[in-house]
Image (cartoon, rainbow, N blue to C red; front, side, top):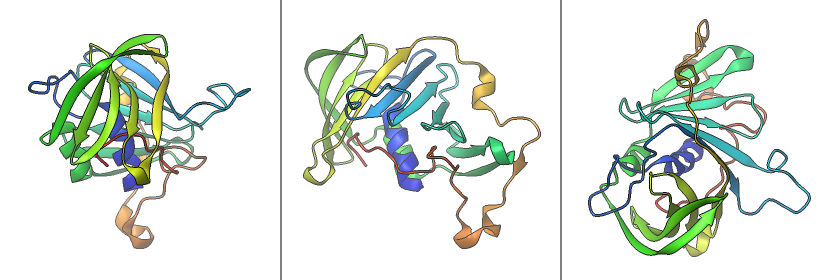
Length: 215
């Protein structure tokens, strides 16, 4: 599960608003981006493909991660170094510290970017870069306002790609990034091995796509 959220967090915004001598790599306004692992097979729609939706709150920097089946989601609060797994069917949630490696990615203390060109992904223009993040190499495509549209690992053992299929600039209600009222907090120390159960149905607790350098 930790690997899952590390990967998804890397997709979101790996640094403060402006990386020194580098591109904007955190969305500067509210946006929802649906990402697919590789190309969607012919004849399938984005709904039937393996798609992860990430919603960004431009003002608070919070991120909501939704899996392909809407049975659970995660809220990542970078400033508070916390991650919350929300399970609507059970009316429960789990709070835990965000993985230190994930936080390091958001701080971008060990990252470099080299501009290589430009492209268009999901109908949105972006700039392409060769990126090195925590000694992991890859290629990324970023919009001018910090939205990641494509990420591909250059590691031979992790030759995977993640690409935006839809980009929707729209206000994201604050309630999307809060724990719903009346939900019960689950004590992870009471579960086997001290690990919280992942949301059912292939949501954020399931197998993760892996397309971003730095993992």
